[in-house]
Image (cartoon, rainbow, N blue to C red):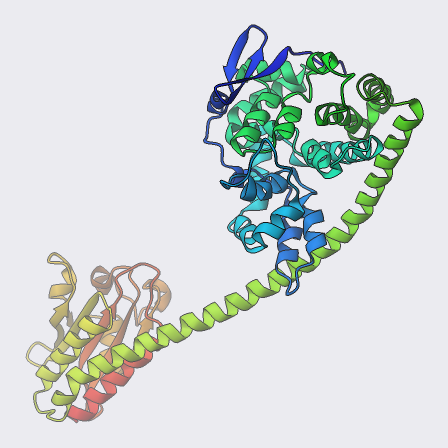
Length: 514
């Protein structure tokens, strides 16, 4: 695949960096405006498996620092997020500072990193990212990681003073692509769709964004105040024209990252591995003066590193499995405790309501001669304290031989239940049956399945299709009234605890008036 040449140069002007692209100059500070959403480093998506592994390590009683550093350095987004915890502080100087993950952890500790990983929907976000953008975060991760391996090996071969800096820069060199996918999903979708039709990726970016991912990545580096050497390497990792101008100077980070980008393709695209092998060899020779032997040694060492990575992934998957099992077990325990808490709260709520009703009834229970007054007090207390939307009392009237709704609370002004009258000679249904049989009913669904004895079309007009409960009020074991209660909501029946409390109230009334 030919490398697309772009004419880029960097110059300092009023302490702000600008990019000269072709015949125009784009201020760095304007490039992130191309994105549809504001750039936020903590929202850059990490590879889910590595994210979970890092969380698992941080949750241990004695977190293994070396493993934590190794895990962070396995993912571009995590690395950038952690670096930003120091680079965005006022005392960090991008012009003169070098930075490593070990330095960050020594400086800030682990708690800020834990906070950085809180409240993340990693698997949901990964799926949404792939569906919305056609961006494969695992392919991106492989390319970035293999480039980082290559940069580290070449830095060691060249005796570059800070191999980890070369590793980190190569790891995050394509951060512009990730930012486009995360913060401009619609544009990323169009870019990837055009690219899949065998169009060069740079051309697709230029068509949709009128900018390229190295420029956006460089602006992110400046926004996060990364060291100037990193900024320049990210900006120029595809810019062979500019790099050729000073290839004979000291072997810089820019040249290492540029060549590492070529070497990574050998391992990411096995179909064209031979082509990329010779392309990488040509670049290594041209930019770094590598001999054939040196180049083969680097490629072999990167290959060995990748085989170790495969073994490491098996170990990680075991750790991930253990973490998920622990997490699942914890979730089950939380659900069990949550259900117990809800049951206890419900019970306490019912006991509280029971005490309040009894406080109202006790003065009247000791003087049970005023039967209607006592029944009225019961209905009023239930309506006030037991959270029943509809409450009604049907009293038996000997003169008409019928049950009549004498007391009601919560019924709408036009509700027919207000004037309900059940004639003993012709009526059937649950309310009449409660009175005749002297036993309570808890009706979950009022329909013909109750049978002819307990269901009637006349009663259905009054009770509608709301669940309800009825309780007989007895004097010397003979019914004199019926208490009706309902939440007046479809699907919300009277619970067994509520049913038991109403039964208790009615027994108190029965004893008082008998």
